[in-house]
Length: 134
Image 1 (cartoon, rainbow, N blue to C red):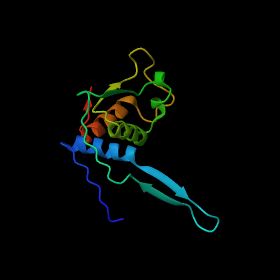
Image 2: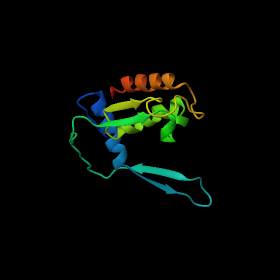
Image 3: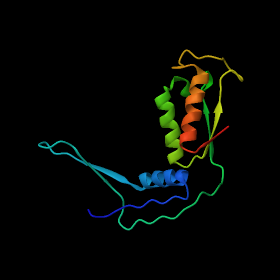
């Protein structure tokens, strides 16, 4: 109580990585008795000070909205945005988007929107987060 948290980044993307690091340092605890609703406590150890920078300039991840992956092809646009945000919070600064049709089918029965539209959604969100797209 009465404590504050400061996260400083050299850029918006650096600030986003700093927020991700703080979230990974935080711990959650739950308490519930028979007479009260469950209570949640979120804390970080007292005196925590971290100064860091990435070991590698490029920290790229692939996202493949195609039938072959058995996961991304069922994503909604909101799920794809959440995946990209999660990757950014863990330090990804570039996304390589793999479209369908390279070595598999052009379409998937699981696609929630056409693949080109999903790639547009993913690319636009990466731009908002200052994440490179290839």
